[in-house]
Picture 1 (cartoon, rainbow, N blue to C red):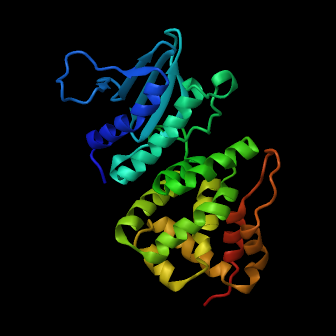
Picture 2 (cartoon, rainbow, N blue to C red):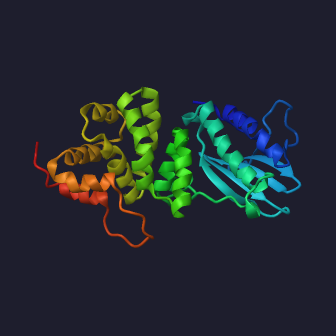
Picture 3 (cartoon, rainbow, N blue to C red):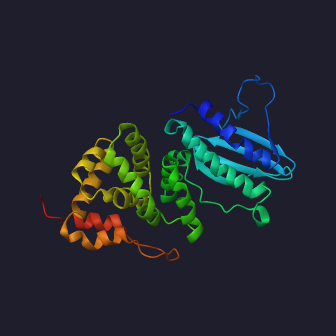
Length: 298
């Protein structure tokens, strides 16, 4: 856990090399103490800004709640988003912030560095849904947002997160979790260390309670169904799951451990091959819950 000022200080230091190489300098707002952080806070919106100027344009880091946006501006034009990242010092340590810096540095150098890609455009990763949008009722969390947050919790997942989007042109959460993220999550649950469990289930509970139906299925079935009704893991997880999630996960795990779940379990282990988006009816959790209601009583 870090304080906001501490996290911002680590963030600025971590970007120093890349922004200098790209030809930018940090802007210190007027009328601030020499030892104060070079940040600007918009009193109306509460957003925090860290600005850099250079001959090629401007770079801005914008912190809005738990979202950090990397913005570029050229020829004194409007700022355009280059990347969106989950940023919550309360859920982070110095290693997490440095990992975030590596990602931001890569995007900055792709755009402005000496060895930037043709056209200088970094391929954008889908923008996660913000807590503000959920709170205002304008959006619900999706699988990409869950993956984004968990990649901040488990920095080793970030390359797989990027590769998933780059390979398919859109984010495929089932593939990301079954092939990569679940092993990290299951290890955390298996060990049951309080601090790690609290961080993990703060994310899972929030996403489940405020997610789309597909996202709830992702949490309850694709991820937590991986516990395979293991009594130790279920006991470890039960203390941290919100009530709605706990009831669903217990039912799903019982069903997945039963003989009649063989086909659905194979579906979990082997997600269908990628196909372009089309309208779907129902979901895997609906199938499980429907089958679970017919499960023999134990």
